[in-house]
Length: 270
Image (cartoon, rainbow, N blue to C red; front, top):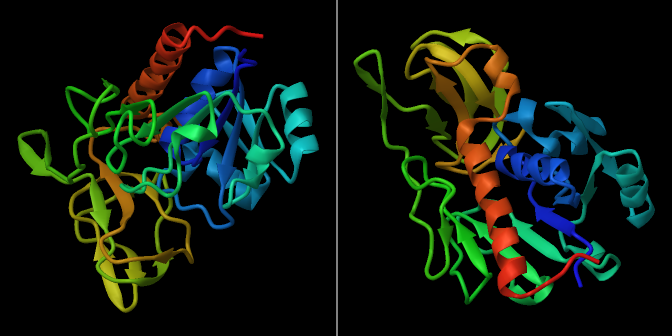
């Protein structure tokens, strides 16, 4: 019997969109994070609550909690609790019905089907049936948000998009491993060639003009080729504070997967 309790591993933008949608749909949701979460779109990521203790995203507040009591208190206040627990020990204390892996590390960091009655994972690195019940496609494009019942998601690439007749890459990666120093804020209008960050002596400059929609937290430790910022020529400053279509599509896929599996497994709400 399900009580509709959902644990989400990872509170970046996509994990946040999932938590937001499931909370609105009546589920009891909590997010599991590590002590130093990595997020580019920090203005729409509940992971930011790890540093700031709370984070408001489109009308629903996420709050950092320390234990099971804090989770229950957050639910009572209609909030989304975020707990720092890299080993997922909290799963031994709370009867989780549904587990969603939204870490998006492109590899499985320990999620398996025995963790909950329903298990769902996002993006490449997981195999449906073997690792989890269903995998959700995260690659931008026609299939984003698609349910994968067998096999794995497509590998993600930074393929160029097109705006006003020219090609551009929204995402820029770190050229080296090290501690990142940033020189711009989310919501800034940036110009091509503008210095935005520096890692281990390597300067990262804007590859095109546009709105800085996301950038890592200043002082973050990064590895080579890790995504560290995102520029979009087409978005407004207001959109920097709203969940993207891609994240909402993936969240919709997760909700669909949950309802499908509840029906297929003949699981009822307690």
